[in-house]
Length: 115
Length: 113
Image (cartoon, rainbow over all chains, first blue to last red; front, side):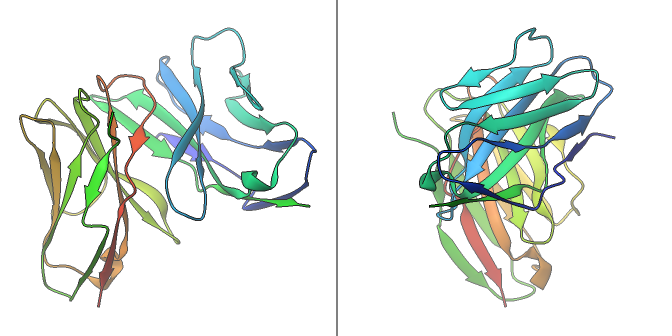
């Protein structure tokens, strides 16, 4: 069964420091995509970063990078130089084709950035 | 280009009623998917449509149904509402329904009393 696990319900980080949000996944499909989304208190879902299962290099988007360890089935999000505006809920997601594309989400990690 | 539009933004219904939620994807996007978000269950996949065909469905009872029109707009219907159906319903679209990022709407907040 497809599964996404985020084991950190809440995380605190000091402003300007880096933080790692954990995500592990489980799939038997060799082709899949891994995504991170941010959901501020306003409720909208914002795409942050994408990693394809066949990508050799870790994805980076500005202050966001994805630490992809395929053998361990982990896709951790690293946010560098945290800002107060990074305080939000963060969701790891996996998209795969199981007789039709489907995206499943982890339970999320709430990040609090302290001034 | 306009984003994904969901209407209405808020909805209050009573148990036993039915409700229809609407989603207009980004122009040119052919795939629409729906998700239910609750504090207890997180984000749960409901279904995904591509070119008017349902391609995948989550583990929800038959009271939850949807459809997609030829202009890619989608509707989701919930019949015989239960208190547990209270949730934020999010719609998302992608250009071709493949391994792509989702573009989300602002959601419809449904409260069942």
